[in-house]
Image 1 (cartoon, rainbow, N blue to C red):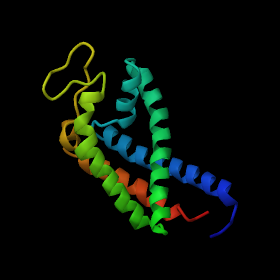
Image 2: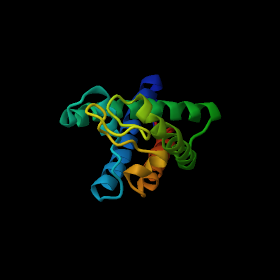
Image 3: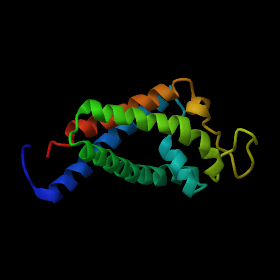
Image 4: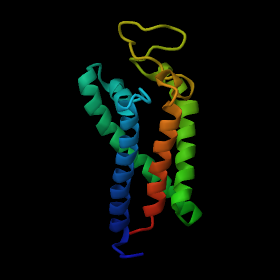
Length: 166
């Protein structure tokens, strides 16, 4: 431990490394999208829950997504505290679990709760124009699961590596 600023230092470090980990996750996911490997944009999907304006959805989604990154990072840190240690590989394993839950459980259920997403059973309508991601997000590209897992593993590895740095 390099320094000891008490609880405020721990909170500050958690927020800082959570922001850095979320930025890394975002760079990987958005880079994958820009390179044509995946069409998944989590900030866009989150933003369209709140607004039908597609341009504004990206901004709103990015803000909510960043806050979500902080909240998920707090969950990771709670796991590190409960086991009594943190390493990059424990964080990477948590990231792998996080990605698996997202790909296997959350994305397939999303059309049933997202107000602007078509379902697998009913095609698009005037209000529900977004394509459903499907199992493993495969409707958004064959490489989507790989990109999603990679980004979440990096997210967790950063958190695990730097959880005890403060």
